[in-house]
Length: 294
Image 1: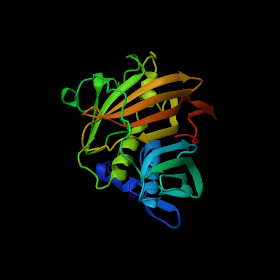
Image 2 (image 1 turned 90 degrees about the vertical axis):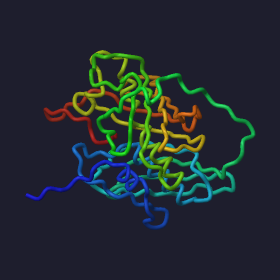
Image 3 (image 1 turned 60 degrees about the vertical axis):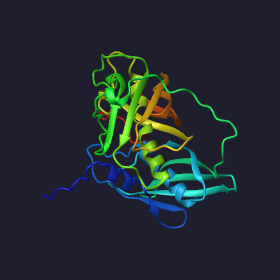
Image 4 (image 1 turned 90 degrees about the horizontal axis):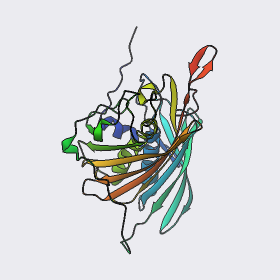
């Protein structure tokens, strides 16, 4: 029996998936990755591909914010199409409605804001937290986030598989890619892809007996909504600190606020994430997390 070859997860593969190509009027094609053990595309990947599509469709402006609701899971084994509908294209700001579809079915929808950019009239931001620098931390193999060419280092090794190790509902994660992409929108896309990795784990940290290792096994988790805003130019080939704080957990949901800092302390992006965290449903004697959420 012939076996299907699975593409390895590398920086080049992530860029291949995110760097969407024209596929008709207002449509942009993202290729399939291929079969995986859990055949579900990450929310951050679809949002990142949407950022690239909007940047290419309105090339004279820069994406400053993108927001998306993830209503149905998409498969790695099939291509995705990003459909864009410009609401208004202005001299200063433009607004684009977006849908990601697979097999003619909507998987998520949202909106992208673009800006012609301007110089500073005023400037200020929150301060970067005082945490260990990446040179004092070990590289971390985060399940589901291992990509050849990307180094991840978690402060205090707080992304822990032990459900009985508790801590505050926050994660501080340094990330750096080996190579710098050729375009700003690809830096933005790679930055976006990581924003959805940390909320569920951060929300679980204070709760004994509940941990990320239980996700998709005895606990159903998924990202339902994400917004990312790009403040300043970010270089993903330099260290970036993702600061994720879960602000609420309850009623089967979790919410986080997040910020991305350069190693020089600049605030380069912010994000908010809404997630599902609940027990698996019983269906015909078997447990299932459903197929409607990512």
